Length: 398
Image 1 (cartoon, rainbow, N blue to C red):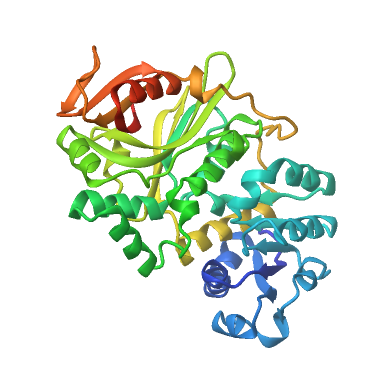
Image 2 (image 1 turned 90 degrees about the vertical axis):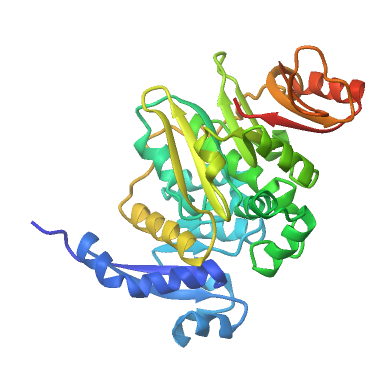
């Protein structure tokens, strides 16, 4: 017996690059959703600052509003898609939609990376769901993988390229010998980086994403302020050349590990990644996320980490999931904080050091003035930097 036809009304808040992509996919894929899921998906309300944005996205005049309250409180709207970013008024949009019995789909990593506990508790109390696939990795289906496909595993590690802007910059430095400053200007000209690129190049964007993925994988909230975060601004062409000559690529990675005692380690930093690791070959604006589970072993997910249609694809998947009431079978446990190790003293790593010094005893020499030491803690590595007057210190993925 076929499923009965179901009309579902979507309210869309934010009609920028991704919002416009979502509007186009709802219209262009309408017949596919109807045939595959029995869902007659309609874009009923859409909110933007100006009508011109809505018109460019093909929104009907009667569906347009410039007040988000009109979307979040409309009795006809079944599900709200929030794509404006930032903490406010996004927080108020979430809570108002929940109180009006609506699921919320969002790509808002800034909000979810900091306040997922409060929002998840509110959603549960209201009997609705948060869906956030598009907040981590653009079009890569990593959130649903952690929520559903890897439930037979204890997640041991997550590591990946979580920011396309920094990966583009590092790719240009490696492949074409372009300086950091030049590569950043190119990224801004192409629309990959904002005019204020701090969230990308300082690692803040990747930090928010590794927090969300850690929350999903291990069930306790990992707060961005507790995560050691180092960006790529100190990387120059000498490091790129030394790494390449020694069989490595420099990649900004977000990394999280479950330790045997039940605690977690989480940090963001540019790493020397050996060429034998698949992530080393991921270039341009692409993202890649590696997960190690105790049953499945190592798996990797690769794809475009940003853009209108890749991110809109993830949003559409979340809409269909929410409408099918496919919540996470994991007990997410966002009512507690995760217990993190002290990154400075309790996580031994291998470290790349560069400077004008005599190599420390026992170090692996990469070239004149460049070595790998370890495994030692961050604090011990910093002590070596001071002792030998090193200029650069980066972790090495092992």
